[in-house]
Each structure stands twice: as C-alpha cells, then as structure tokens.
Length: 321
Ligand SMILES: NC(=O)c1ccc[n+]([C@@H]2O[C@H](COP(=O)([O-])OP(=O)(O)OC[C@H]3O[C@@H](n4cnc5c(N)ncnc54)[C@H](OP(=O)(O)O)[C@@H]3O)[C@@H](O)[C@H]2O)c1
Figure 1: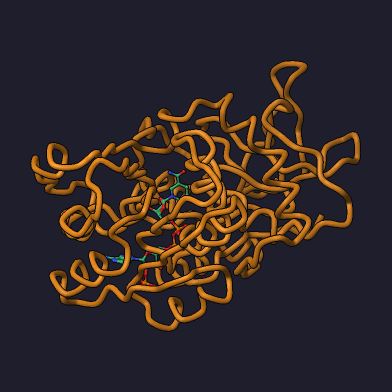
Figure 2 (figure 1 turned 60 degrees about the vertical axis):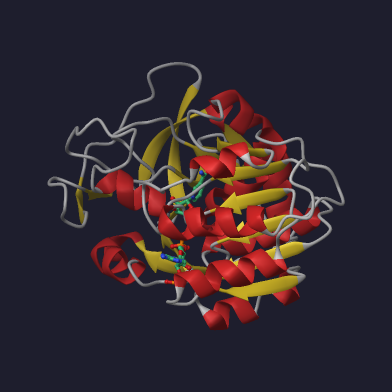
C-alpha cells in the first residue's frame, strides 16, 4: 500500500510504498482510510516537536480520520500514539477508539472538523463545570479550532461569546457563527490587551489558543477591569500558536479568583475523550457547525504540507476507496 512517510524530521512526508500494518488483537481492525486531517497536531507529530514524540522513524503521520473496515461500516477513529498513522491507504484502528458513522456522511467534513472541534468541546465539558448563560472569550478565534469554539460555546448555551483574533477578515465572519462581540488583536499588544479588557472583563471562561505574550497581557487586562474579582475565571490553555511559554504575573493569581487549567492529551484522559466522541460526531455529521475544509489527494501530501503552513481551510488528505 501507499502512505505519507516521514524519514527525517524537518522534511515533509513523501508518498511512497509502505508495509500494510496488521491488527494485533481482536480489538483492532484494518481499515481503508478515506480521509485524514492535516491538523497542527499532525504537523508537530511529523516534525518530532510534539510533547508525545518518541523520535521514532520512519513515521506515518495522522492522528485521526475516517475509514471503512472489513465489516463495511464507516468509522471516525482516533489513533493512539503510534508511528503507523492515518495518512495511509490503510491503517489499524482500535475499535474502542472509533465511532460508527452513517454511510451518507461526508468523510472530508468529519476528518476536518473533529480535531479542532474537540478542543473546545472537551474543554467546556471536561475541564470546567460550564453552565448555560456563562460568558466565554475565545482567544485566537480565527483558526479552525477557534471558529469551532465560537460555535460550540454558543451551542452549549453561552451568554456572551467574545471572539478575539488577528485576522480581520476571519474575525468579521464570526458574528454569523455565534460571536456576540469581536476584538481585533493587531500588532499593538498593549492596545489589543486594552480592547480585551474593555470588551471581555467579566467573562467566566477563556478558551486560549494563543498563550505566549498575548495571553499574559490579556490576562492582566481582563483582571484589571473585572467588576468583581471574586467571580471565578477559568482560563483554559488549549493551544500555543503565539508561544509555548507565557510570562504570567504572580499578581494575576493573587488578585482575582483565577484558575488556569490545560485541556489536551494527558490533562484529559483517553476515556474522557472517548466519552465525548459520539455526541460530537453526531453534531458534526448533522451539519450543526460550519466547517472549513479542503480535500487534497494523499498522493499530493508534499504539496499539502507546504500549503498547510498558510492554509486557512483545514486540509484533508483523501484516497479513492
Ligand atoms: N488541546 C486541544 O485539544 C487542541 C485541539 C486542537 C487544536 N489545538 C491547538 O490549538 C491551536 C490552533 O489550532 P487550529 O486547528 O485552529 O490551527 P489553525 O487552523 O492553523 O489556526 C491557527 C490560527 O492561529 C492564528 N495565529 C497564529 N499566531 C497568532 C498570533 N500570534 N496571534 C493571534 N493569532 C495567531 C492564525 O491566525 P492568522 O490567520 O492571522 O495567521 C490562525 O488563524 C494549535 O496550537 C493546536 O495545536 C489544541
């Protein structure tokens, strides 16, 4: 069979022949992969920079996808940490980490949406006791995960959903998806933080895809403008597109009821992720959320890798099966 194969960290995967994997137990199944998303997490898996990386090569990247098993059924699957990923004509899945899908669904939409959507869905369901009517700030709302977070917060009954991001055109599209206000984060960090402090001081939850300096500045601006500093604020660290570390002020943690938690592989157990899969898959296949996807053939993985660096639509690699 063919797969996207990484043989050196730092180089894009190449489409080449690769041995077909073999299921090792009754819980495993060989599936024909129809679609696999090129998520930021997959890029960091493929360049060895993700915190779960074991530096083992060769590596077929891809952490999830849609495939068809020998039973003829279509499934969305999440793979465990493995060097035999989803960007292949065939891969081995653990049936317990999969959800059966209707035959009528669009595999590209599901493969594009599940990973970015899961970030906020799981954060709001597993990392905070979120209640309808609470207000949410999505920090870094213009990426695929951020625009999903806006829609999911709304779906979960949020009162205010404030979307902050640096791409003005993408930001402008978010009110139609449920944002009640938007804040443009431009090159002026102080100005951006000031605008956040004015627009979102009293939110209950921040879903933060940025981290780095912008998150630290935003945190201080929000807390300084909070009407009631005893009101709990849960800051959910979810992505780090603006930097892996942030200079958090000690005063932020002392002067307000701020709780910083993370949401991701490790802070959320595999069991907790799996518990959320069916309901999320149901919403995505029902068309509840607007999904920005672009399909490309698996054979063009090299091109997809270059395009993904500045892509806005989530690229999904597809096979003809
Ligand atoms: N923890 C989880 O469960 C989980 C799940 C999925 C994703 N994530 C993480 O969430 C993050 C976003 O993922 P994604 O799928 O949305 O990626 P994406 O579609 O590639 O979007 C990334 C966005 O980040 C924006 N951005 C980059 N640097 C920025 C900065 N300095 N200030 C403001 N915006 C900036 C980009 O904006 P421009 O358009 O302006 O370039 C782009 O819109 C990644 O770190 C990813 O690993 C976490």
